[in-house]
Length: 187
Image 1 (spheres, rainbow, N blue to C red):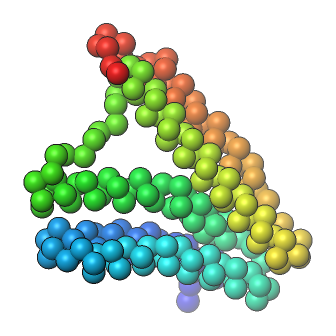
Image 2 (cartoon, rainbow, N blue to C red):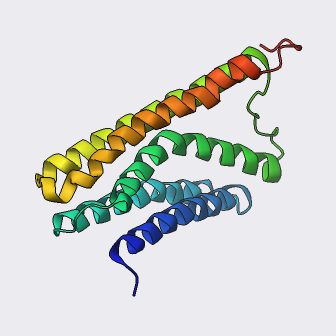
C-alpha cells in the first residue's frame, strides 16, 4: 500500500497529466472537430482540476493528517498553475491553430538582446505572482487549520519561495542581461 504522502504526490502528478489531457482534448475539439462551444466548455474543467487538488489537500489536513512536503507542493502547484496556466493555454492554442487551422506559428521567446531580457523579466514576474498566490493560499490554509502541530512543516515553503524567486531572477533576466548575444539588434 502507498504511503499517505506518496498518494498526494501521485495526485499532483495526476492533476498535471489531467491538465494537459483536458487542454489537448479541448483544443482538439476546437481545431480538429471544429466545435468551439464544446471546446470552451472543456476548458472550464481546467480550474476545476486545481480546485479539486486544493480541496483534497485542505480536507486531508483538516482530517488531522500532519502536513508533509507533498501538501506544500500541492498548494505550490496551484499557485504556479494559476500564474503560468494562461500562458500555457495561449501557447497550446496558438500551436493547435498553427498545426490544424493554418494560423502563423506560435511566437518563440527571444534569445538575444533586450527582448530576451524583457521575456525573461515577464516570466520572472509570473514566478513572483505564482509565489504570492501560493503563500496566500498557504497562509489561509494555516489560519483555517489553526493547529501548529499539523501545519508547521508548511512554513518551509516561505523560504523555498524566497529562494526560488532569487534563483529565477539570477538564471532568468540577469542571465539574459549578462550573457545574451548583443551582436544583433532586437526590438
